[in-house]
Amino acid sequence: MIMNFFKRVWNLYYEGFKNMGPVGKKLWLIILIKLFIMFAILRLFFFPDILEENFSSDKERSDHIINEISKP
Image 1 (tube, rainbow, N blue to C red):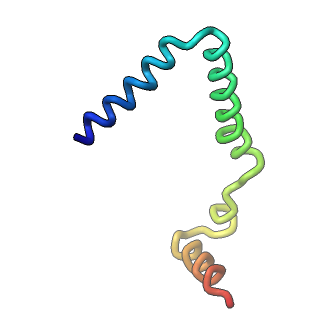
Image 2: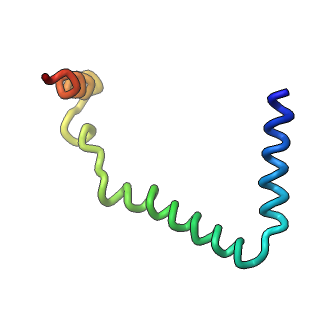
Image 3: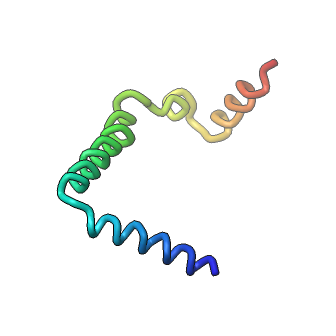
């Protein structure tokens, strides 16, 4: 039952992308490039791993997070 649902959803997207015109394909390419830039490249430069830099062990990181969450 569930596999039939997933198979129908897969066929919906597969047929939709297969029959899409050239403008739609170019728009999807632009969307995928923008998502890659947002999640891969911007993350490297603007969102450093602060816990990794400031604490040397997992125990210290977890203690810091627990203290920050449980502040009144």
